[in-house]
Image 1 (cartoon, rainbow, N blue to C red):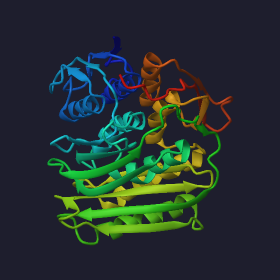
Image 2 (cartoon, rainbow, N blue to C red):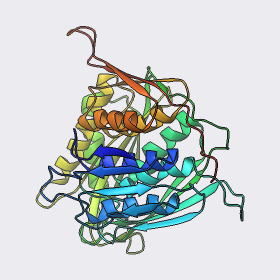
Image 3 (spheres, rainbow, N blue to C red):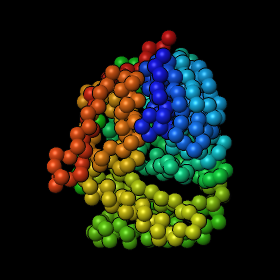
Image 4 (cartoon, rainbow, N blue to C red):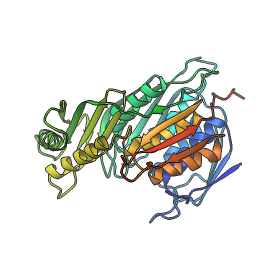
Length: 373
């Protein structure tokens, strides 16, 4: 059994998600200690437990210590199997983070003898627009299409209903087709972002927010993007007034998505908060997107650490040109190297006068789906 210190580096739920996913894919027993030791409330929160229990079901494993507040858990995986799975945080815990935990597992799952189908559906319930996590729109419009582009996989995401703090109640569907028995993921090559072709401005308002909230957010975002990136930028607006059928309670937000000639997709988002003008909400997202686009990086801050696991699993050598690797990214590397025969190299910009772009290189493990027991 491999032991992972859950307090190292970033020390949060990402260690749980990545360690459990890689353990399930490689059918390696793992114990995670000191879970979220440096947090205000250490141990498993409800959304972390839901993620661990989801992976337990997907891999027909045994989870020990699976209780809210637990500071140590162990997972003994069985076979990863394609199928229909549901996870519910029963709070406003992030749907996106649950999907991130299960998605790589389902890519490496094998069809059940009864169905012989390589497809799986994941139904996730919780918060679609949560704090400290990318929103459901990011999963739908940035992560899923990027993984399709980079890995050649079949993956679709549907945001069926939005859910906000404190009740959650959102619903997302994720459909994925698993690899064939002798198949590996291809290496990721992100060394040149290319030109920005267009930017989608996606906004919404729900519940108690004024009926024109989405339009105001969109107008403000467009204005800020044009100021920073130029009037010639192709901007496409998608403003939606949610109904009681498409959103639980009240919320509003903006999701900006840049599409580039290389196939790279970068995103930035923000959600409305009490006492914060809508113009400020939109401006923060616009500045975040403009900053990463002006840097020349191939990925945004959320994508950077999410690709590490796939680079580690892939065959061959992967390259990722990005801004300075975040603590989340460095943590993902350490966890991957603990569970896979893979190695990462991080190269800083060559001189102080050059663009502040870093290169992350990974010699992948060429992992294939495990043969059923």
